[in-house]
Image 1 (cartoon, helix red, strand yellow):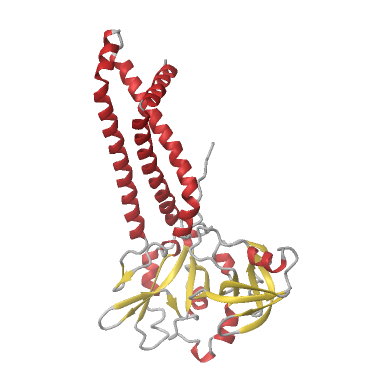
Image 2: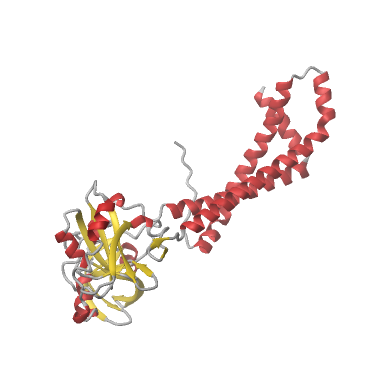
Length: 375
């Protein structure tokens, strides 16, 4: 019986080609737009959540209080990480990085590759889940003349990632130039990482060679500090404890500290007068609402067209009732037609998404893809 309903529904679709085309195309377009926005929103919500210790990973923030306003930034003194790790029992691990990604030219075997990177402290690979495929977490930053490169950069320079530990190369930035040796290779940062980088240099080199020694003090905010807090740590109490951590060491400092979950910084990175005031999450909410409206409009259009068509089929309904068709059999028939149209629209929407996804990725600077889970 069900097979018969769908056979009749298919014949009706072929009989009313213009109506079927408009209805299916309208619904498919709306679904495709909603799917694309969903993929973008879902990706935004999962940025930086891939780290194994995500629930314990925090970024130290600094409130700079002036007479007229409070400015909130993640930049802190480079001395903060080792001091917190030593003095605060709640801190399981702490690491510094420079506060910016820098452009480098990396040279090896007559190859010159543009790459992006930053300086990072010992413990970086314990705090963050960037997987090392060559080298030891404890040793990669032990020598200030070492370098850790990504898998893709290794292949560009040496056409392989095997047996390249100890090989020398040269890096050059706008300010410095240095010959170094490879101490490790890490897998490329996943697409869900907010920052994509190709190399990491020891933070000890930055403080020794790039940052003049007279600027390495509690008044200079040139680093980002990341903490792994012990499970069960009361964050409100911890924030109260570290509030004046810098002020106690820098006389006259107007800075107070607090921590926030690292994975929240991407979406909730905007502060106004010391208070969290949104960020990219506003775009996520906006596009979620837009997707919902598109879907509602597509559904309303689908229902209106279906209603308009049904008003032309009164004669058909009357004849079927005269021949003994029951109420529920008619309901099942028309419901079958609607389900068939919806299913066809869904298939076409998926095809549209697959076709336009590469261009959509270019526009949004993403690496989105559809995943078909069969079980």
